[in-house]
Image 1 (tube, rainbow, N blue to C red):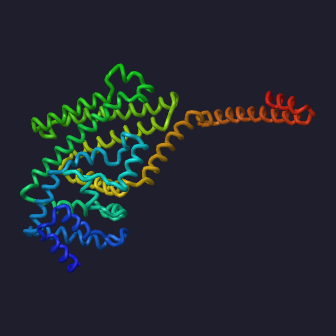
Image 2: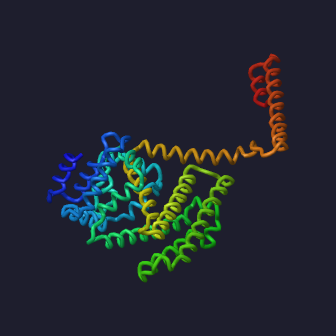
Image 3: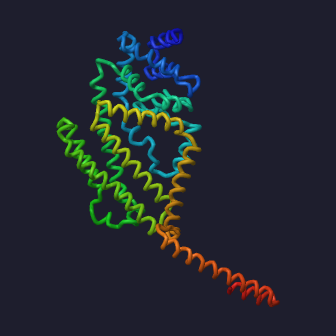
Amino acid sequence: MEEKFGKLLQKLEREEIGIVDKLSHIIAFIRPSDPKEIGPTLEAMDRIVIFFQKKDPIAAEISDAINQLLIDSKVSTNITTMGILSRNGFRHEISERFYNKFLPTPPKKGDFGYIFATLFNKKNDHIWVNAIEDEAWIAFFASILSSETYREETKDHLFSELLYAAEILSIWIASEEFNDNFIRLDKTLLNRDSAFIALQRDINDFVHNVQEEHIDLAAIELDLRHIYVLMEQCNEQVALLKKKSINRGISVNLTYELERLGQMIQRLEEILKLIKTFDTPESYLVLMKLFKASVKKNATKNSLYEIFQQSIRVVAKSVTNNTSEHGEHYITENLQQYVKMLFSASGAGAIIAVMALIKITILQAGFSEGVETIWSSLN
C-alpha cells in the first residue's frame, strides 16, 4: 500500500497535470481490482483521508483546486436530469446513445457529467462505489474538500445550485399542465391553475426570498410546509390522471409521460430535503444517495440495453393499466361476488358449447361447400 501511495504522490506533485486528472489518479488509487472486494478500497480511502487531514502543502493545494473545480461546475444540471426519463422520448434517447457510442459529445467547461465520466470511467465502478458505506464516503469527500480558503464559497455555490435545480424542476413540472395527453384526461387543467402551476409560483418566491434577502431557512419553515402541501397535491393530481387514463384510454406515450412527471416530483422532494437540511449529517446521507445513483447512471449513460429495459418497464406498466381496465370484472372480494362471477363464466361456457354442437351438426349435414360455409359463418 505504501509503495502504491508513493507512486500516487509522485503523480499528484506534477504541476502540468490538471485537477481532473489528479482526481482520476486518486480514484484509480482507491479502485479495487475486484469490484466485489472492497477491503483494499477502504484501506486506500483511509490513507487518502489521513493524507488530507495532515494539511500537507500538496494536499492543501489539491483541496483548493478541487473546491475551485466544484465552484466552476454546473452541478444543478446533473441533479435535475440524472435518473429522469428523457423529455424527447425513447426514440430520441436511443438515437442519441447510439451516436454517442461512436462520436461522444465534446466536454463543456463546468460540465459535471463530464467530470463524472472521467473519474468513474469503468463499467463496474458502480458496484464497488455502492458497496461502500455512506459514512466512509462522507469522510472521504470531507477530507478532500477541507480547503480552508474555499470551503465557505463552495458551500454557498452548492446551495445556490440546489436552489436553481429546484426552480428549474418546478418550471418543468408546471409546463406539463399543457401536455395534450393530460388535457385529454382532465380538461379542468385548462380552466384553472393546477397544483403544478401553484407549486412553481411558490418555489419561485421561496428561491427569490432565500437568494435575495438571505433569510435563515429556519425562519421560513412555514413556506416549506406550504410547498410540501402543494407537492402532495401534485402527487394526487398524477394519481388522478393515472386513474382517469384507465377509463379514457391508456397508451405507452401516456404511461411514459406520467412516469416522467412522477420522477420529477420525487426529485424535487429530494432537492428540497437537501435545502432544508443543508450542511447537516442528514443532507450528507441524501447526497451520498444521489452520488451513488450518479455513478450507476454514468456506467449506463450510452447503454442501449439499459434504455431497452427502461422501455420494457414503461410498456409493462401500460399493459398492466390496460388489463386493469378490461379485466377488473374478474376480480372478487367476497364469496357472493365469486359465485356471481362463477355463474357468469359458466353461462358463457354453456353458450360456447351449444355453438360448437351446432357447428358440428352443420358439418355433418352434408351441405355443399358454399351452403356449409354460409351456415358456419352465421353460427
